Amino acid sequence: MGDCFNMPEEVLIGTQPAGQVERVDCQHSHNSQVVGIKKLSGNSYPGEKQLYDLALKECAREFESFVGTSFRDSKWDLYPLSPTETTWQDEGERKLTCVALSLPEQKSSLKDSGK
Image (cartoon, rainbow, N blue to C red):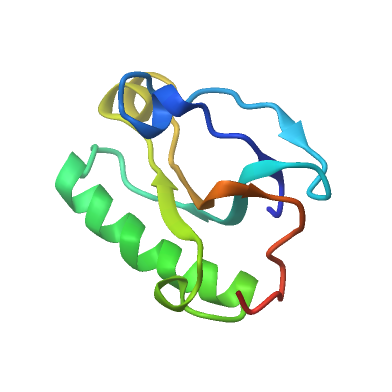
């Protein structure tokens, strides 16, 4: 948690699924930072809509805890990364990654920044 990276534009516009990203030092230019990770349970995939609703609720809490303010009151956006049905079933991926996203890029960590 707290890792900074640059989310590829293709992921942001939905033409490419999120995959591995290259971590960067938070003091260098970046557009994304992990503000929380939540483990999910259950054997069957809950469905895209239910997972998205859960992700928004859980990630809003994670953001506020990490940053010190609500994402709605900050200049950052909230971008939850959740498992797909394929990764849930085939790879056992049961984790929700809560990402703060900023365009333009930033050069500092959000940890306890209150912004």
